[in-house]
Length: 203
Length: 427
Image (cartoon, rainbow over all chains, first blue to last red):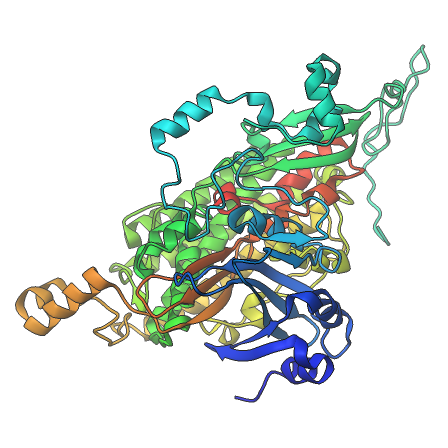
């Protein structure tokens, strides 16, 4: 099978920022360096020969082998050229788990990046509202799709129940909502102070 | 709203003795009180509310009756399917897919099997392909029927709900006689199907395809030129094609905005390129166009089903499973009488089907949009990562921007038009 046209173009233009290209089951995968990722994504979207205008998916992969790094995966699609491309950035687990957000390029990235953050603990620099999405704001057991997270969670069922009963239900509302609620004036003074400082609730 | 005019003046506005409008035509904003001195109001809808179609919670900030901001809260139905998948053999993941988009379980099963087969490099038999096409299109019809009925209820039309659910029940009966279950179908296996259709089953589906368009015609008569329906849907929650692409919308949501992308046509699977069907595309990207697109898709699905049934008749008696003892379980009689078959049976049940190292992403056109399954394998019988690309989740992410500036009552219409299913959003 001939090489994907975007791979050659990427190599010609960004050279060293392309960490590798491979193919698996007919899908082309390119690995790029995190520090130039945003630049490359912008080029992918705006260059007329690429025009990857559609972001299919953003996700992450952690391998069972603890030595292997985390991978952030973007599935791109060009509706114009009828092409698909999978882009990966590898993240060393020892380093900061952060990649640039593509929110400004594709708005579809909004919730997808929040989900990756929620499930893997990977931050997306530049995302305007990066908070948990499937788990609640005050969830503090960790990031469920990481391999060091046990299938049944860190706490026993009894402990989870105990925590739920002991929780302050107000803490489950995001501070953002409470700040515009009618009952804002009725909130305890310390809570209003915390709101003013932009703090999130805790259980 | 270029070039679209709808006349739906039901009465002439009349002023009462206080100078207030007493008969307002639909669409004309009534003269109300001044807003609450610019003060915003916060409304909470859900998580237990029939119009949110599941456990979705919307916090809506209102200026008068205008929506300033919508904050959706999801996750109430989170079950950790993706995590569970990492602890299961590929065939054991099939039952999990029943429970994601539970309005089209058979199509999800098909998508999962296709993704696993792409990963393992398996080519399925011709009869299996046709059966899977039938499963996908039946799912499309029931999912759209549910959508049509519940959206009707959301906008105040109760009767079409009864008609559509009656027809949906007929497909559920067919599903039950094929798979033994109405909802938890678990129809596919890697490399084949759980079962072939029972004797005489095709006649039932043919009869359904022949008679159910009557309901579509009835709904069409009730809604398409109905002044109330048009008033509630046209120009509501509109999204341009450029925005629809930018927001990664898929399925009817994307096509209603005028983007002619359908995975069945553009990334064909199961031989969809050999079927004769049209992809309806909208023009304005509003709630009305989404309704028209979904209605037309049901007609097209019926067309595909009839073609598939013709092919199925020609393939009578052909195998549904690949002839590979490492992938497909041997029959019970064989497993109990033949040593080799018994070993294969044992190894498959105990060790599962091993996939080579690698990864595969396979999208299919589900009723809700593009459903993609992404598998990463390290060579064992359980995937390292099983990712569901959930169409409802990504379509719902556009809800806040669709609702800004709309009326509170439009939020219900817009939310209905997205066609969400919380099992898939929360996974």
